[in-house]
Every structure is written in structure tokens, then in C-alpha cells.
Amino acid sequence: MRVTQQMLSANTMRYVNLGYQRLGGLQDQLTTGKRITRVSQDPVIAMKGLQHRQALSDASQFKRNINEAQNWLDHSEGILDQTGQNLKRISELIVQASNDTYDADQRKSVAKEIAQLSEYLQDLSNSKVDNRYLFNGANTDNPPFKNGAVVEPGIAPILETGADLSDYTIVYNGESFRYMPDEAGMVFQHVSQVDQENLPIDQRIVLRFDSADENVSVTYTNPITGSVDLEVDPNELSTVENTAISTNTQDVYIEVNKGVKIPVNVKGSHVFSASLFGDLARLEKALSDPEITGEELSEFITIVDKHHTNVVAEQSEVGVRLNRIEMMVSRLDDQHASLQKMMTENEDVDIEETIMNLVLAENVHRVALSVGARIMQPSLLDFLR
Image (tube, rainbow, N blue to C red):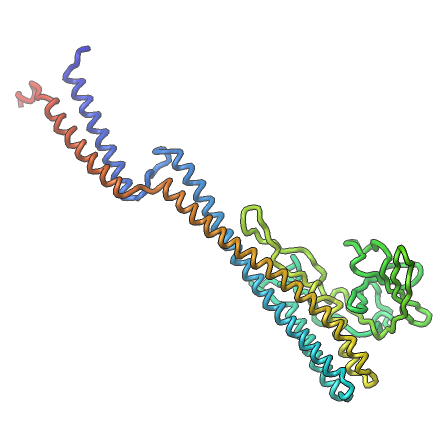
């Protein structure tokens, strides 16, 4: 094949331009510190970079979510601790007041302190974090405890005022009962045996009111032994308006990793229940009764201790969740560091290697220019100038 001067010149110019392009690319890498500045330079690197950035963005969001979850649970733990301390103080007061050396005035003073502690518990139940209520399930915009609602000892609100029975919960022996329409009379069934539509699941534990003499019986129905009726003094009951305390038990979930959601709320009905405030109202009334005996008062110790046990159980649950979140934090930190390393290896250039490549490319380019100057011989036009 015949090689002309024009072919030599064209090849020389092409190689010189390629050298300039290579020098320009290496200079861009040194300036930006990145392997590519446009997707077209290497689509594979660009695609991996997008994936790594998305993963890093997700990890950063999960870390923010974890901080929110920790904040929520830390506040809940603190409130539960204060609640437990209050209940312990109430137990101490009951022990003191159950001593028969205490006179009526001293017990009334104890009743006043318990009333203050009960109000403080109501305030604790309405605690908020980031302007959201902690103990009202998924309904975080409204307080779980309604100030001014009926929480009274005895059953006068429903027997004397002719109120709608379905508007009240009866508290007996630390348990809550709701009104169930029954042909036999006024029947209140244990809340654990009522479905979401307020319909009875079975009839194992009920409070049955005898409207004739206002006596109350508690019926425990056992499929093996049958039913056992126990007569209950109405003074052992307390009445709580249904709207007084929220029964929202929906969990508030926060996603702490992809596909991993943790409930961060404490169900208010497990701690600040109708039975708690009903029992405290009954305790306050009992302490104000000059005829009450120390033995009768001491029965409240078991009731309050039961509520305290519920608080401790919720504290343990919160502690378990916090431990899990701490492990998730460690895992996310490792994941974040790994993603950063992968993204660096994918996108960033090795500065030392790039400088060496640039020096080498400059030398090659100079050689190409020198060789080109020799190959591209002067033409006749150059002599005619």
C-alpha cells in the first residue's frame, strides 16, 4: 500500500489530538479527584456511584430515625421511672397509714398527699416529646388523659345520676369492666374479654348489679367447676368515665433499617390505666373514712404493687428496645463506613498514580510532537513564502 505524505500528516495529527485528550482527562482527574466527570466516560462507574449514594442516603436517614427512636424511648423510660417512684411513695404512705396508731387527721393528710401524687401521675400520662404525646398509641396529637373527666370512688355516678352505663368503666380489684347489654340487668364484663366492637367474647368474668338492693356480685365462670359468686361491697368499686383515659393501643413504628421497624411507644393503658386512677380515687376516699381500719387499708398495698409491677414490666420492655437500637446503631455505623469505602474505591482516583500517568502522558505527547515535526516535511508552499 502506498503511503502518502497526507496520510502521514493525518495520522500524526490524530495521535497528537489523542495525546491532548489523554492529558485533558488526567488533568480533570487531578482537579476533581474523580475518575469520571460525565456518565458517558464510564456508565458502569456512574451506575455504581448512584447505587452507593442511594445506599448512603438511606443509611443516613436510618441514623436520623434511630436518633428519633432513642429520644422517644429515653423520654418514655424517664417517665416510667418517675411513675414507679410515685407508686413506691404511695405504697410507703399506705404502710404508714395502715398503722392503727395513725388517727383520722393524719390519714386525711396522707389522703391529700396521695391526691397530689395522683394528679402528678395524670400529668405524667400526658407527657410529650417533640410535641407528640408519648402514651396515647398512634393518636399522638391528643392527650391520653382528659382533665376534668369523672374518676370517682364507688358507683354513684351510674346508680344515682341515671347516666348512660356505656359511658363508664367499673374498676374492681385492679381490673376494668365495661357495660354489656344484658336482659338479666346491669352487667359489666372484663375488658380483656371484649372485642374491638365492644362485644363480649365470653362470659367468664363479669360484674352483675342487682338493681333491687344495689348489691353487686362478681361471677367467675369456670367450664369445669362452674360459677362462684362473691358478694362485693360497692365501696370496693370505682367509676371512670370512658373518655377520661384513652385506650388507643396502636403502636408507633419507626423504621431503623431497611424492612426493620421498631415500636417506640408505651401503651398508656398498660401503665396509666383506668384501674390505676380508679384505685387511687378509692384509696383517697378510704383514707378519708374515719371508720377505716389499718387492716382494710393494707389491702391497697397489694393493689398498688400490682400497678407498680406493670410499670416495671414496661420499663423492661423499653430497655430491651433501647438495647436493640444500640446494636442497630453499631451496625449502621459499620454499614456507613463500608459504603463510603466502596464509593471511594469506585469513584476516586489514586493521586500518586494519576500524577505518574500524567507525567508519562506528557512525555509521550512531547515525543509525538517531535516525531510529527520530522514526519510532516516542508512542502513547496513553504518555500514559496
